[in-house]
Length: 266
Image (cartoon, rainbow, N blue to C red; front, side, top):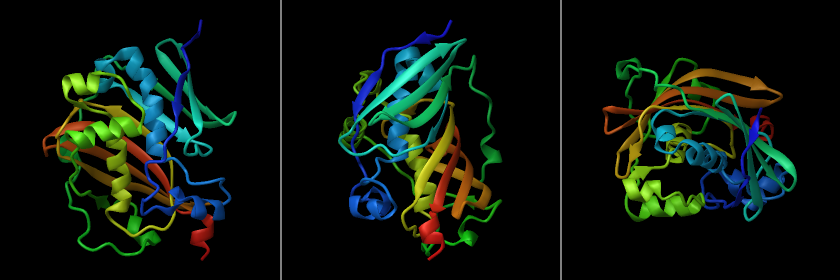
């Protein structure tokens, strides 16, 4: 029988009001038909990850598999309810805000993390000079890198506060939250081109090793698809996120609308 877990309630916080992505700016988001600036999808994903983290603890950080699709926006200051049901080892997760279904996803705990070969993922730097986005920016088969990033000390504590995560495991064991890996995945886009307003649509992430506070984290990403659908221009990425040049942290698939219909038509 499916087992319904206790609802996890979060007061959503828009961490990206000052972001280069103006979809997080109230005024610009309203121009696209939204009620205000969107809470970043990667942070909604982080809210969702609280559930498998509470269920499986450190094991989830070591080998958990999680995916999410973002359906409707979550807005700054609104309550987000993360509901989950467990059945045969699979968590089915839904995020509701303003009584609307905003995100769906699943999480599971494989018996072991799959083996990955670092050499299968080309390490390239982010572009030296970013240019305005075009379909050629995300040519299928192209390898993309990111500027190295690290979260340590106050930066790590601030991130946990931003995503409203209070689980003591991160401070106690000096671990990085897997939501940081999703932030690095967003940087595959941002570090390589100048984007207008854009939208993170969904992600799949197989965790391979816990990130540690102070790790230098990069993504080694390959463009697997670039297409137009309903006037929007989409990109799909397949990436290995790596710590300190040697430790695979996660295998990720990331989908984004890099030019919404209104921008693509301009």
